[in-house]
Image (cartoon, rainbow, N blue to C red; front, side, top):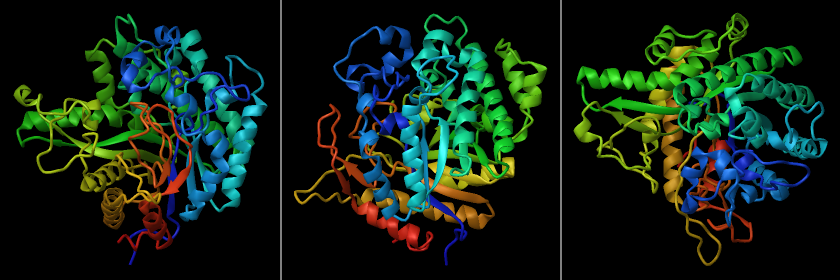
Length: 479
């Protein structure tokens, strides 16, 4: 018997900047992702200084071509529907819709693309979940405003949100205001379009940007519910399950501090006010934010559900002697100084594989917010090999998803209300952090390499047929 409710949403997630390509077609201008080279040419360094990066010329920009979804979208949607998806999470490219600042009217040529995609998805039996901003700040916002460091970005964002809510009010029910909103503290360019070059107090700038995004998110919730009261509008963070390395109280306390840094965002979005610990953090770090009474009033309108991505877990210690015992690529090290968990294995990219951590995270977040959850990203980045007869035998990916879905089902049995699961990503995409194609998550293989070579041919992996079976059985048949 399945632990998943009958109306459970099964699907997958992509992002415009990692999927579409077509970076200069139909009036689109550059986003923050379009200016970055691949990892071999200093991607991580380039993202720290975007205005300087804009002046440079690179041989290859991975996100400008991605997997050419701009021209393969119809084929791809049919492949997704073939797995039995009843929901597809996607995002829009902000600079495709508003190629310049202060535009009164949107770029209709860009919007027509999304009209077609959403209509086709609905025809194929898939609801659409739109992430309004998924690491896609326009470069015009970086150049003119320093991204979300400027309050004017609230109005620019709300203009986009209002357009989408109004245009698709009868076709789209589920929305996320910002993808992994907490990542602006770790990847300020991706998360908020910030150039912190020479900034004397980067924490101040990042948390100011966070405040403006939180206000924009809350105002979008208010606006969306006026346009269609049936909208389900959610928040999203990059989820991470952390453990204390030892029972030593200082380790446990440090773990709590690390978790609060991420939970700060949904604490505001789901509760409607700043928690006392956040105010104390600002005071201790000399962070003085531009917060108005109107802002605080706006924040009171909370999200309908809380969503998160989940890939891995971390281990927190205060013992400085142990902090060298970690891989630089470890996902958990993005958030804090995390040491290797001796009880668990890691992926090809050093990310700890921890299915039980998903169950723990779901229980923790549901206890904390008492709102429905949705797991909107979860997957395994791995190196795939194509056989001579165009087969991809990815039993390692099947194992990963099987174990995570089992734990999700157990969390639901624990009493967690979970709306759905959109794994990342159902088709191979360009990696957001490294710009690689070799880091593959999909159930569908795309013939494209790290240098942009390939035919873009789509191939079904073994995992494609496994997930189809899992979806059709509503999570009962995971073997």
